[in-house]
Image (cartoon, rainbow, N blue to C red; front, side, top):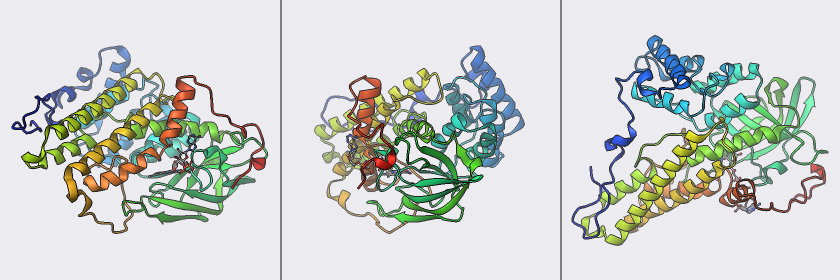
Amino acid sequence: MAIFGESVSSPRLPNMTRPDADKSSTNGSAHQTPAESFPSESEAQAVALRLQRLLDEHDPRELDAREFRGHQYDAGLAWVHHSPHAGGMDARPDLQVHVERHLSRVGLTSRPAVEFFVYLAGPTIATHGTPEQCDRLLRPMFTGEELWCQLFSEPGAGSDFAGLAARAVRDGDEWIVNGQKVWNTLAHLADRGMLVTRSDPEAPKHKGMTYFALDMHADGVEVRPLRQITGEAEFNEVYLTDARISDEDRIGAEGEGWRVALTTLSNERSAIGGATSEPKRGSGPIANLLEVWASLPEERRTPILRDRVAGLWIGAEVNRLTNLRAAAARKSGNPGPEGSIAKLAFTQMNKEITEAEVDLLGSAGLTGYDYTFRRPETLSVTGENQGPRYAFMRARANSIEGGTSEVMRNILGEQVLGLPGEPRVDKDIPWKDVPRS
Ligand SMILES: Cc1cc2nc3c(=O)[nH]c(=O)nc-3n(C[C@H](O)[C@H](O)[C@H](O)COP(=O)(O)OP(=O)(O)OC[C@H]3O[C@@H](n4cnc5c(N)ncnc54)[C@H](O)[C@@H]3O)c2cc1C
């Protein structure tokens, strides 16, 4: 279906189509076997064979999605690039895309309600967890039986997250944690939290941190809603008061929390930037903009607006293709600092798209929004599919969550372009001596 009205007298645009009409991105049919739809080289065919076996034994159209995902995990097809004890088979990371693509073609359409944190906690535990932790934590995370949240930020530690103060003190085989976390997305639903604490105040700030998989139902863990511009409380404050954590739930070595957290953060930036999914051409926020455009009366579809919409469509497509290319080139499971490119580019694009939607609506963009307080059960950082007014407000957070755009530019400048670093005067002094407000 062509989406731009034919009667407007501006230069013809390429035929920008709805996603379901996009032949270029379907990549095969439901009748193809994995062997036919995967690349022909041997590593890809080994994954295809594993997938064929999984599908022979378990039909995703008949099983509950959670049950099927359990079998998928056991087959080593949850994250093919992870080791066999972590839901993988030590294969190339880009082959996971082929697995997901094939599964959705043959009928596995339902995914966990809060999948976002699987992209963060999954690689973190697979990279830094013990085999026992992988066995215990990864399968229920992948199936969606246990939901996760992220407990990094504090009132005094956001961009400078390494300055955090939530204190963990060892007590035999346990740790006692006191402190406050903030902006914790969907913590009200979570069973587990990725928690980073200060375990050694005598050490410089990056060296005295320890990372845990916190049981969110433990005594001393209190979750309070924080209301946002959208009216909903998607995020929360989390208070930790003498909360006890078993040492079995420590991820990585004592004092190594910064290194472990970097794995979470790099995966978060990629996930927000859209680098972990494989969206179809014209899907996502840009599809919403096209819907608003299509709903306009003909006289309002001026050449100037058409030019703006076309420019955004092209920008969204450039981002999509850049992400696909980066995913195909990735040699290891964890993205490097270049993941910040995806995050920065997505943020800018999503803000521009949602602004355009509201502009196209004119004065109607200012009315008809329900600000009733609510606590959502799913997360969409794009804000898509909940109407242009919601999307416009939700997109404001994109340049803050997962690291601000200024911080992304710092990372790219220093770690990708090799520019001189910011002065860091507190880097080598004990955390307890760093002045704090
Ligand atoms: C919708 C949303 C969801 C979130 N979800 C979570 C979550 O689930 N878990 C979690 O732990 N956190 C979460 N956060 C918190 C988020 O990670 C922080 O808000 C973010 O890292 C910024 O920290 P801050 O808010 O303390 O701002 P600050 O760090 O105080 O920054 C204030 C301003 O100063 C700028 N700035 C700071 N340092 C520098 C620098 N070195 N160079 C240039 N400019 C700088 C920033 O860019 C910003 O403009 C969420 C935030 C939002 C908005």
